[in-house]
Image (cartoon, rainbow, N blue to C red):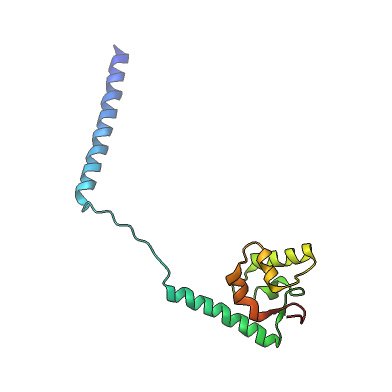
Length: 134
């Protein structure tokens, strides 16, 4: 008899909790306008172009300050990071590739470094050399 009463109390408590949850859910739905809004943020094209121009001007400044082009076969990772589009990771990959393969024989060989494609090579071509050979 006691077990039956406890079971009934538990069942009533669960039913009450469910009803409270359902009521709250319905009230919440009534208060909303029924429309779901998704807000996305995009970087305007002009902003990304200006950041590319800023990277380019940084490389121009670095090249101007040095008075010469950056030698791909001798530059440190820190020096490589002054080039447009070359950050810490790509600079490290360039140095690692250079050490593993004995240097670059052409600027286009940069395409063999993971993460560097034709656009990036074109962006840095005017700022690099291979020890005076290019």
